Length: 260
Image (cartoon, rainbow, N blue to C red):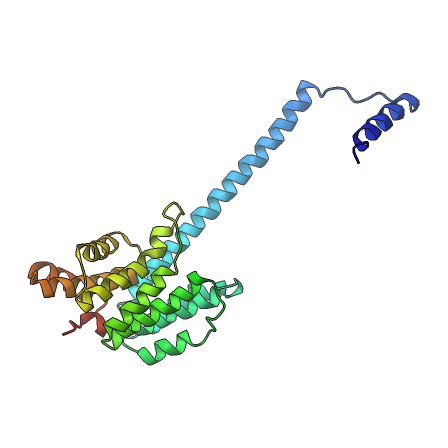
């Protein structure tokens, strides 16, 4: 195998010697200019195409977030379910697309207090054998159902902690903060509801409430903060969170409940 380069070179030399042809000389400056211009055009087209695709993806994600925010004003979960169906149904062709859709639909029902329908959505797919980051969604959603709909914060907190422990997203990865947000919020709310919260728990809820672009995370953190402020006797901030929930999710009954 080591002789192949020499054999190829020898063949080229003999070919040009006995065929009367001359080896190709170095390309002219004009040829180099034309080639450079073509390469530049291809690169420019690729950059513009990539920028266009990124802009379209950003616009689509922002549009979906805006529609989900408006859907929370509807008196039942049908509008929210329709948004998730439209946005996430095409992803069913991806390996775990059906799981993201089932999880989102389950949470929509949970926010409106329908635990039975939420669990029916979760059981519509087989979570066994999926990657930890996918199975964590099912744990967190079940924990949310327990805390929102069934006043079982201790069980919900245990599942939320288990879900968070299954998420291995380094902070250096793009989107990791947003990816962990809902799991961290669930844990902090569980700590608030069980009376085990500390200043870090409230800081998590406050930061995600202020920074998240996701309506569900914003509303869930507002509920947790309202409960925490109410129990701490901070009437002004508790009222501010109540106004947020009344304005943005007036028909989500669990979000207007202060557990005893």
